[in-house]
Amino acid sequence: MEIKTRDLGQHKVLIVTGDIDLYNVGQLKKAIFNLLDEEDIESLVVDMSGINYMDSSGVGALVAGQKKVKSQGGKFALLSIREDVLNILKLATLDQFFTIYENETDIK
Image 1 (tube, rainbow, N blue to C red):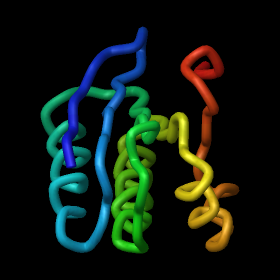
Image 2: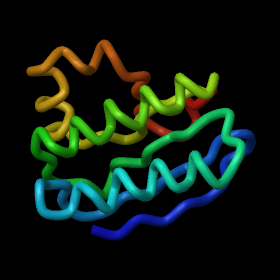
Image 3: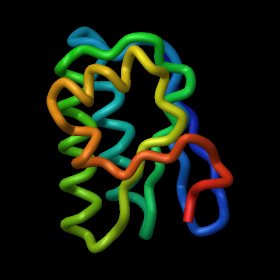
Image 4: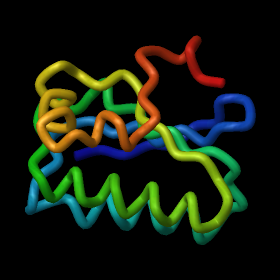
């Protein structure tokens, strides 16, 4: 898995590529939490366009990330989720829990 960050206006975008599974989920969680601890972030968007596979541990990391952002008064969203990964969120009805943007132009 590879993780990069970039700014998009007032949003901090975390770009994740590769698979998210039990073996590397700690890397994602650490990246989210370190970013939130190091910077004053109003909005964190996780770009998931490069993720082909995610298991339940990845879902858990995203839920933990959203809770942390919300506890700090910020906003959390997911961007460009591939259909297979989106189906995992839908099975757990988490597509209703997360703010999900199809592309960057939708981000408010």
